[in-house]
Length: 154
Image 1 (cartoon, helix red, strand yellow):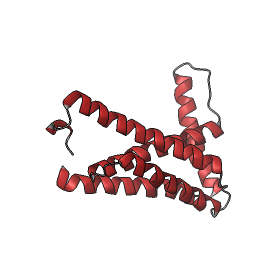
Image 2: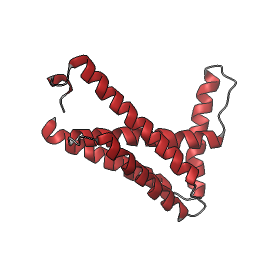
Image 3: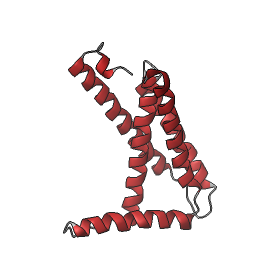
Image 4: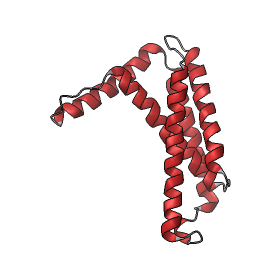
């Protein structure tokens, strides 16, 4: 996996970034429709489970921000780890924060959308949690299998 795997992981991380920016390019109406469908899906699943709790449109949008950047943070950390960057968590954080700032910049210029500093902070928090989750996974595997084992090699 070492020879081609790192390039595949890099391509997936770049695709993830572009996917996030693709959502930012949507105008306000299309964005509301997308999150509205997610809201119906989540609240429908909760109702089928017998729950009376229902998420609000705002909450679903914010969860979407956090989860999307959690995945991006884990992917960026994984990519940097595959390319053997020693301090990959410290490099991944500003990279993901830059993606979040650009994301909000795109929204600023998209019709019917608003850029918000709080979204940059939420996106960054999601990315940091994803980076920490990946880092914790690597540390746990090293603790279990040892640093030089082939089981956790890239």
